[in-house]
Amino acid sequence: MTWLNLAFSTLAAGLLPACLLLATPALAANSINGEWITADRDAIIKISKCGANVCGRIDKYLVTPPNGVGQKDIHNPDKSLRNRTLLGMAILTGFKPDGDIWRGKVYDPKTGKTYRSEVSLNSPNSLKMKGCIAFVCRGQNWTRAK
Image 1: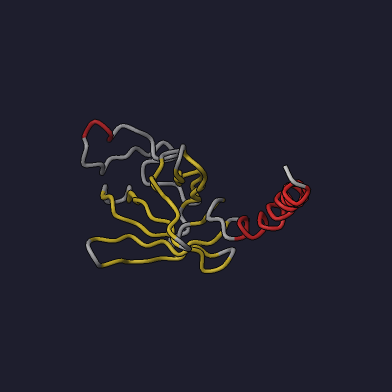
Image 2: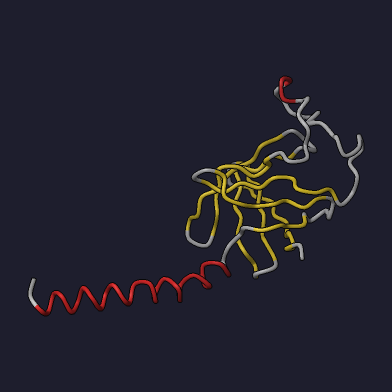
């Protein structure tokens, strides 16, 4: 190894950790991870890593569901899933980053329907949630829980 290669290797080894430290706050600021209050203000969805992807689970109720805290997934088209409890259930699944947008699926337990979905940050405390059928999307804003 020449002295130039050795110098470059030493410099790169020192700069890489510094660059990673500088980049980390920017990545964290653009994260969709966290607790989000739905647009209807009826629940908090906790978004976090689930295996290789990101998912969102019903973490807390802000309004008691019609059948109480133990509300079941009664509208699910799969009859074998209608007995599962909504609290703790993943309603956002398979989300992967695509630039500034995260793409996956959203399940609406009020209707039992699953939609293609896009999620993006409007600001650090505002999340744009879209559910789509074909090329038609409907959106709502979720607020970061404090």
